[in-house]
Image 1: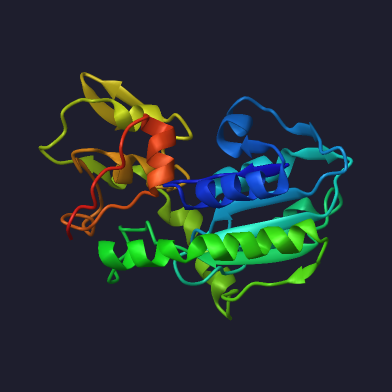
Image 2 (image 1 turned 60 degrees about the vertical axis):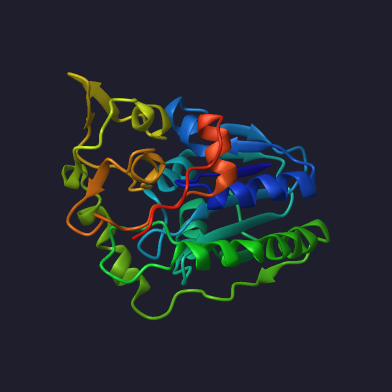
Length: 262
C-alpha cells in the first residue's frame, strides 16, 4: 500500500511505478484527507509514503494526513521523497509524526525537476528537465528492488544539511494564497478549480479565487494552466512551467502541455 501526494506529477509517477513493481494499492492522500479516510489494512504488505519536499520538509497536505492515518497489519514501511536538489528533513519529520503508530524502515530520495517556479533562483531549462526524467525510472526500480527484498536503511543521496529545519519553519509563513494572481490570458476554463488537490479554488464571476488564506503550495494550478494565466508573486512571469506528462494525462485526460519558455 502506497500513500502519495503530488503537486505536478513527480511523486505521482514514482508512486505509480512502485505500485506496479510491488503489486500493491495506490492511495491519493489529497482526497483521503479531504474525506477523512484515515484507516487502512495493509494485510502484511509494505507500506510506503511518497511525496515531494517543500521547504526541506513535509507538504502541509501530507502533514495533515499522516497525523491521522492508522494502518493495521503493516509490513516494512518506507518513505520516498522527490526533490529538486535536496531532500531536507522530510523523512525525519514524517517519522516523528508517525511515532508510536508506524516505524519507517527505509528512506529513499529521487532528484526530479523542480516545480517551485516562484523561487527567486535560476530554474533548469525544459531540455534539462527532459534529460533528468530519462534517468529517474532506473532509480525508482532500484528502490522497488530494495523494498521487495526487505532491505532496510537510509539510502538517501541528498538528505538535508544543517539549516534544513530552520528553512522549514518559514513554510507556514510563506504558503499564503494572496500571492496568486491572474494575467490577461485567463480564458475561464476552470481547469485550476478542477485540478486543485485541496479544492480551495472557486470560480466566482467567471474568475478563479483562492478561497482559503493558506494552501499546501503544490503549484498544480499554476503549472497545469494551459494558458499560463496564473502567476505567484513577482517571480513567475515568463518562467517555464512544469508538469510530469503522466500526471497531466491523469488529471486532464489529454496530451501533456508544452513546456513554456522562460
